[in-house]
Image 1 (cartoon, one colour):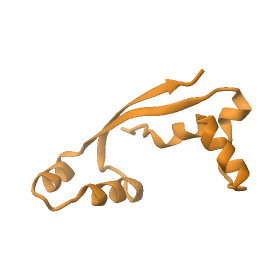
Image 2 (cartoon, rainbow, N blue to C red; image 1 turned 180 degrees about the vertical axis):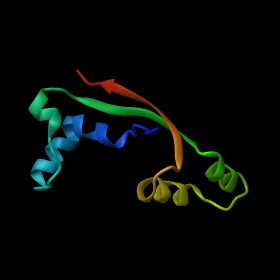
Image 3 (cartoon, rainbow, N blue to C red; image 1 turned 90 degrees about the vertical axis):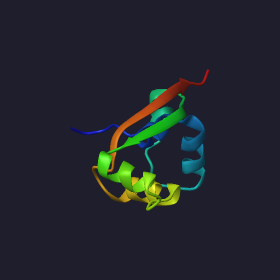
Image 4 (cartoon, rainbow, N blue to C red; image 1 turned 90 degrees about the horizontal axis):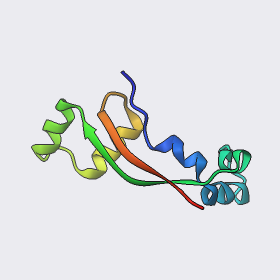
Length: 87
């Protein structure tokens, strides 16, 4: 099973796209190409049981969890997030 994370949806954020263009970043400005503008609203992650247990025991800080989510697979069981359309 694969989780869809909120990160790819930043490609549909027009404000970020404009900053990427100004900064000459390699990110794809999909919001501009497609004429859309979305922002990730609220976001919550459910960790897999092994990582949740380590977090509950105080072995992992919030910073540790964020780093693990970026660096490893199978840390998150599910992501729950809201995509908001800007008009």
